[in-house]
Amino acid sequence: MLEEAKSDVEQEPVLSSYYHASITSHPSLGSALANILSVKLSTLTLPSNTLFEMFISVLEESPEIVESVKQDLLAAKERDPACLSYVHCFLSFKGFLACQAHRIAHELWSQDRRILALLIQNRVSEAFAVDIHPGAKIGKGILLDHATAVVIGETAVVGDNVSILHGVTLGGTGKQCGDRHPKIGDGVLIGAGTCILGNITIGEGAKIGSESVVLKDVPPRTTAVGNPARLIGGKENPKMIYKVPGLSMDQTSYLTEWSDYVI
Image (cartoon, rainbow, N blue to C red; front, side, top):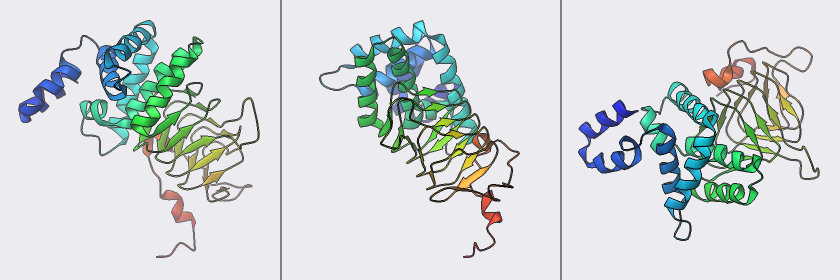
C-alpha cells in the first residue's frame, strides 16, 4: 500500500496531504485503519480523535482483526474488477470500511461494551448505508460489493471467502427470538437484492441468485434462485457447483439451465 500511495501521489500531487494523513504517516495498517474510520464516522459531537483512540485500542488488543483486514483487502483486489489497488479499496470502498468497523464493534460487543458497539453500528449505518448488528459473526476474506443497503442481523454467521452484493438482507422472519438469523457457509456468493430469512443454513460453496427470497436451507455447492427460491436442477437432483462462487463471482452461469430463457 505504501508503494501504491507513493505512485498515486506522483501521478496526482494534489493528493499528497490526503495520502500522508491517511496512509504514509502511520506506523501500521491498524493505525491507518483507525484513522480512516474515525474520520469517516465522526460527527460534530463525536470527534475523530475520540473514535481513533477507541479504534486503535481495540485493534492493538486484537491482532486477529488486522489479519482479517488484510484478507478483506485481498478479496476486494482479486474479486472486484473495479478495484484499482489496495489503496483504492482502503480509502474508498464503503463495503470494506463498513466491514472493518463491524469487526471492531463485534469485539466491543464480545467484551460486553454494548453501548459503544451499538454506537458504531449506528454511525456505520448512517455513513455507509450498511447495517450490521455488532453481534453478527463475520469471517475473513469478505467482499461487500457496492454494499448499499446490506443488512445483517444479530445472530447471523458469515463464513470465510463470502461475497455479498448490495441490497442483501440476512434477517429474521419477524416472529422469532433467540438464534433467528441465517448461517452462511464458506465460499458462498449472494446476489444483489437477495433476502435470506430465518435461522437457516446456506451450505458451503452455494450460490444465491439476485433478488431471491430464501426461506429454507440450501445444500452445499448448489444454486438457488427465485421467490421463493428453488434449486437449479430441482430438489432431488440439483445442479452442483465445482468452482467456489464466493471467489469466482460467477453470477450468471445458472441461466444456461433455463430452457425458456429467451431475449
